[in-house]
Length: 468
Image 1 (spheres, rainbow, N blue to C red):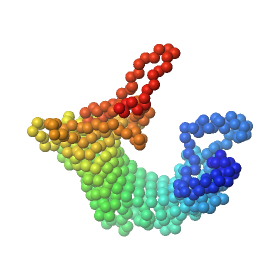
Image 2: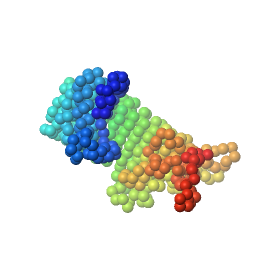
Image 3: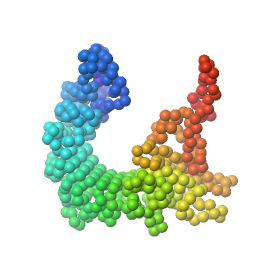
Image 4: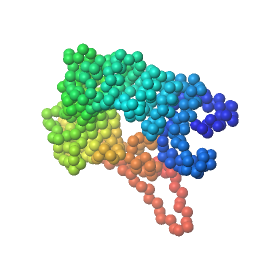
């Protein structure tokens, strides 16, 4: 930003172009740290333009200060800013500078804030007052333990009436108060309840509450051991809720995996489901209907145990993924395109011609299991949460006029748009070829180069030769 200002002062035509560019950008990100920051710091230390060697000011803080001065002197630019991103260290240490920047941005909707502002500590009082008085158009806010008074006052307050995303973390408030405050926000479409003390199924009952919990598009329930499937399904069965909700995230609740089919049934527009569950007993596979949803597109199915040695290979652990594989093969999730799972054996379970251990659907005359899955599916798997996702593309079974059994078709994946692939595909995509393994998987095969004598140049390789 400093170099940009210098260029703009020298060239008036360039200054006009820069000003027009800033006006066109509705979202303005102030500054963020990246891998180059360390290199840039070393360059600043060696430069005489920044004072004595070793005496370097914080670049992120300087940029934030420059942005504040620019927005203060240019009302049109300040009015166009809707989002402000800041580095973690900057927003935690430079709260006064951040407050000054916020004070000149009247249309701000999203801003990175220090953690203490969510708990209403004394160090964040000035910053919070600036947000309440200068930023009435705010769309996201989080209330953590210690902010019970501010959350209760939100129902009668005049600020932040356009909040769309509300997160409640470890608050100690009554369920009636939660429903009352959230019902006063007409634009709220996403709600996250995490570790709220004493929260149980009564929050979902309109009979016990004068004001029921409002419907939302995206709902997250985390660390709520008193929330059961009965109360949650009762909430989802309300017509306004079932026709509105599109995304559900469940983590460490009392909702068992075998109740997921009951959760999916009333949600006619559900597109995303994220489930994180700790197990301590086998899955009752024979008595539970398969997962069924005509609209679900993305499923994160992370089943885990407290001991790492009890994961893969344990029948109690694998039975949960066996249930998922059976649902996929039977075709009860026809719109699903992306699946994330903490399992290394799920891919073998999904092999249409060798569905070992999967309860077969009606068989054909040649006694080979027939699958009903009709869509292509991107399956991301890994053994533990700390690793990266490995992608396997599973194509629907195809039967030609001369084939007797079902086969899967494998196509090379385009790297035009980066996907969350494993490092082998991201870093050496041009040195890999696609090899079908019978059920849509890919193997990375390194290029074979002939040995080169000392002093001899290596033969030139065509980078696109592998494409044929």
